[in-house]
Length: 356
Image (cartoon, rainbow, N blue to C red; front, side, top):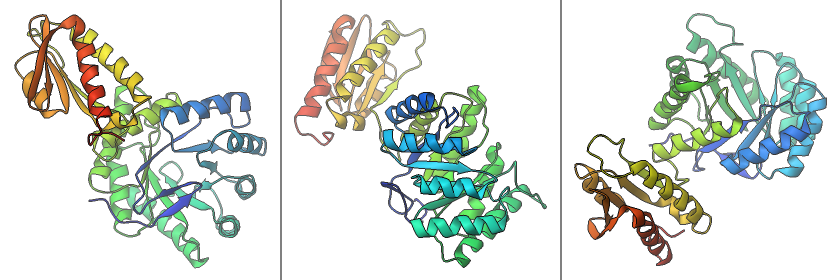
């Protein structure tokens, strides 16, 4: 069961409470480079971003923040380090939330930032990172203490519009931090494994670090951090949520890894199925709730196909088409995709439970 947290408004969406676990990302280019910034942000939105964060390095970046607010409808977060002035300028320029790092902003300046945020009803994420926290004893204890000290500072100013994150590059350290803080406060938590890198190890860190916590009911919004294009972070974040059964964004395809038993061109069939479903999804949003099996042989194929909403299982140059536990028919490989997509369309157009 998901941990109960406060519900915080960020622009036109909410984080925490009964709000869905949201997917957010951060742009990679200079925020002042508007010609690069806007196309990147739009691609993130197309990939499914629900919140976008931009870095504010200097006053030139404020112009980029204003531009992105004019071109993108989802909430914008300004990422601030070192300078209170930039935080205040960002809030005055339309930022829906700001992120500050208590490890590199003085307490006096944090108070001035909070004062403006309170006046404008803007949320602040207290983003504690292992690279900038003062370590005394265990890293996780130091990070939690940093967060708690900053929370107390905020609460003493009667400010509760708070989101918390405690990120490290280590799956073990990150999960330890979030488990500890989740027992101590009820503010919504922003999950992520920072500086994960790229490649299989980076993907594994993100999936495990974020996924383990979500399985434990911890987490209200997620950001995957990769040395990759920003839209790929969004795609992985959505996949994590769907794999855990937390949200649905696209139809789930169950397909076998193939082996020597397969006597059909399963990869070719799967490619055509994916393409057809993507095209169909533009007209039928409810397709995201379907589970579709594309199996290669008779060993596990029929069983898996029956457990899906609809599916196919290969034989010798032909496939059997199932809908739940009912066999609809057996068809040659060359027409099986057409038959499958036709049945999917019937499900979506007959007012059945999958229709959105």
